[in-house]
Amino acid sequence: MEIDEAQSRMREIQRIMETATLFTLLPGLAAIVGGVLTLLGCGVSYWLLNSYDFVGVAYLPPPVRKSFCLMWLVVVLASMAVNALLTIRAARRRQIALNPRPAQAAMLSLSPCIVVAAVLTFQFFTSGQPAELRYIAPVWMLLYGIGVYSAGLFSVRAPRVLGLAFLLAGILALLAFPIYGVIAVGASFGLLHIAFGSYVLYQQRQAVVPHE
View: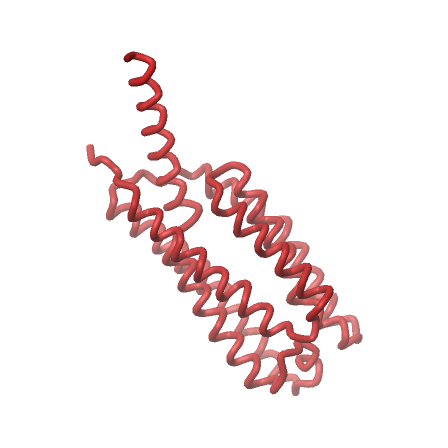
């Protein structure tokens, strides 16, 4: 009986830790909002480029090109802000103490990938070779997939699955559909995040956190 009780307590502790991780590292609603913002950005991109190929960015007038880059910067910053705000709000509502360790693991895993993505994007934009711009989307997807998968090694299973999905989608986009970068971004950073966020919200609703 004591062994069964100990195992039961261990499972309860693990469930609580996983639930806390879902709030600190995997905020479902924030993923959905980020996915919707990405889809809106893709819609504006297609309207500006009149194409699904990011190569068209090279042929935009300089003011429009700056607006294009600013739009995507706003999408990224807005997604990050929503992520932080909704995480704090959800944790307070459910009286869950925010654990900084999952967030630190996520930052340590994602930061190198973000830096590499930023450097490669800058290189693509300044190289004078417009054809290179079509590889921006697959590069973003692959690097993001690596970062998310790495962060998932120190938390629950869900981010590892998301990371693998981004890696597979990035490989497919790179090898088979590089000229459809706008669609690739919408399908990955948009739809995959929405699906992932919906799954996380479902998992959060299933977890009942005892109040002190």
